[in-house]
Length: 387
Image (cartoon, rainbow, N blue to C red; front, side, top):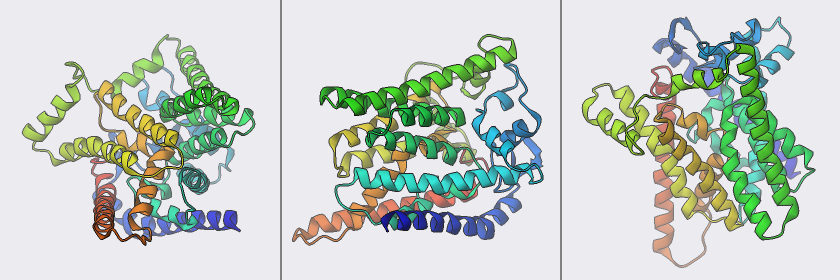
């Protein structure tokens, strides 16, 4: 019964998001002129917002190889293969959207299982409906590669924690990174479980974690080498990636310096909001990870490791524009938020009234923050605040 309810909750959540996107969000995006990045002549809608267009182009016309073809070779191949599997009579953008939506339903079901595994107490399956209001959650009803990647990263983490057959973490890890390079952020998460399993002599946990890490790194390396081979240029993949790195390198605090420069001297509100969200979203998640209750302390450390890796990479790349895209492919981004909301509003029979008031107040503040981020997503995507 619980499994049936879990999948019902996932289906209902995605259906509700689709209705809201179609009725409310898409008309706003149409009026504000949502278009392909760097291509204002190519309008898009919720079926392929932001960079979805390039996945469809690669699927329909093939890759354009070369270090100067960053709008083609940036994008990993699995989603293109999935688009190709659907009937060509269906428009490419609709095929992308269908793959994304189906993956989103599966991702929610897997996140629900992880949520229960992380929680000290039984969790209502319908809590996953709150994902729709969490930062980045509404994107589950749009065509993108983030939720297919989340599906695989959640499956990977669950297979490791459940001590499944070792072939499963190898499969899910490889598929995750062939969907998006964001899967690399699962490496520090799994590293925590690898060390924990080794220390506790939990052989299956340690080996499963090691296999998952190996699958991610091997598949990523294989794709990089394949891109270089097809491009007839060693380092073509990384050369294309350099386009996304802001050339502002003045030491480890350069992003802070750049952010301060934007806040103090840049009149464009778009850049201010983009940099503010890049710094704020992961720091909020990190703060929540320190205060929530977890069934096992190792889960808290794993969550901190994943979020911390995103923060570190943001500073190393000097690029704040993709933080939310990184976060929503990390299953712990949603788990930490849902656990915090559950604890904030859970029934409390204790006599400590002041503690109860503080917890409820913190929950209300967090929900207000989620509401602001939801508006930020709706308005910021077409105006390029969000990415």
